[in-house]
Amino acid sequence: MSVLHLHHLENSRSFRILWLLEELGLDYQLTQYERTQAYLAPKILETIHPSGKAPILEVAGINPKEPDEKKALIESGHIIDYLLAKYDTEFKLHPQTDADNPAWRDFDFWMHYSEASAMPPLVMRLVFSKIVERSPTLIKPVVKSMRKQVEASIVIKGINNSLEMVETQLSEHQFFSGSEFSAADIQMAFVIEAAKSRNGMDNIQYNNTFNWLRRCQSRPAYKAAVEKGGALDFK
Ligand SMILES: N[C@@H](CCC(=O)N[C@@H](CS)C(=O)NCC(=O)O)C(=O)O
Image (cartoon, rainbow, N blue to C red):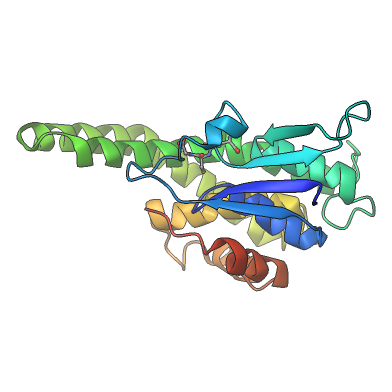
């Protein structure tokens, strides 16, 4: 029995964990779920963790007093931190914590920035598109026009700010924590793939970002994750 059991929802942040497990070369059990028609996670995920969202990583033996007990970890950033602390003991996928090291500061910054600031406007974009899709025909034009105004002033500005910051980072460095690939690239790749598909990205304006994404996608572990969990295909 594997100690690690990943619950992976198609086209979701759990791809990050799948990719990291492959980078670390770990043995793990994988259960895959399809999204519902409403593009949500299936209810069954709530039986594994009350959040009902992906990723969920179940870890056995985390409590030495109860070796058979499994703990369900959530939040992609937290799961990544856990896996790195436990299994990346030679620091191949993250810099050692050191406030004076710019590589660690960059690593830590992008690990947080991805979920705290970069993802929310992308999620809003998805939610707005669903509101329009599901609004009654009669009021659709009004809803569409409201969507356009809010998106232009808040959502698109937020996405573009993030993309500019990312492009600047990747024009100065090969990766998010400097010259070496790290788990911060895994965390940020999901953001960029979502932005590419939900916002559109000009490949000349964001040339360094596109080149970095190609470097990420050509990694054997990325390809193995696609093979096992399916390529990201955003709606
Ligand atoms: N901040 C959380 C976000 C988790 C999350 O929202 N997951 C999405 C998939 S990308 C989900 O499960 N959505 C389905 C739902 O809400 O029903 C993380 O980084 O893990």
